[in-house]
Length: 266
Image (cartoon, rainbow, N blue to C red; front, top):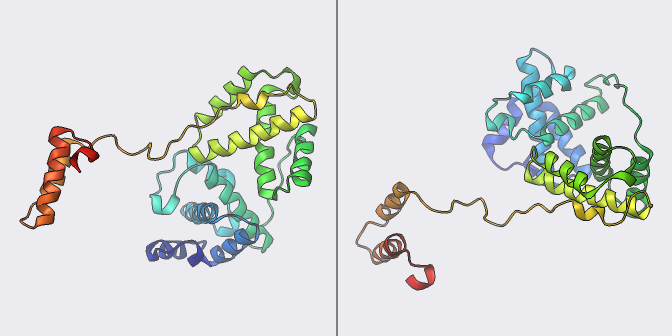
């Protein structure tokens, strides 16, 4: 089952060499049944392998996964990328799903549920609305409800008093500690929640417009220019008497020394 998500033999070997390998194929199958996409499943499978290594380093078995200890580890994690992957909310959430899977198959004992405050009624109603009128999956409902509960905890349980400035300030504060994918999901979930509140007359209409869009242009992360050393290496790579190499060298010299545009060179 892992071959569905990982094609590199080195990565497959790494996953199957860790303490969690006997359970990863079953976890991958469970993720597929629950409707998770390939990119998300890859994150969660890497998280499962990561938590297994951390528990092994603490002389604990896979059956004794301690999510609190794993969260503590992530704060100062220096694991190689192949072992730990990216350290973000996907990592801890994937570890939680993996532990839940192990509980279902009898490997882990169910964790003692911590006392949590009851969900606000507006969030409960929002979840029911997502399920009934939007046909959202369980994973999507949990994600949207998490962001809805978070903004209510930050701004208060009475949305009639929320202002656009407060909503924008809350979003910007959260976005400053998140990656692009998380920000985009949070934008969608908060706008949906605010529209729901407006339709139910729990807040004024139009507050969803206070949630700013995340600007991310294609190729925005590409370098804006090459260093002098890189240009020299590029020119040197075109050495040779063959016609194609002489042509390439001429093109690179025109671009680098005269600053011509591609159309001008052509």
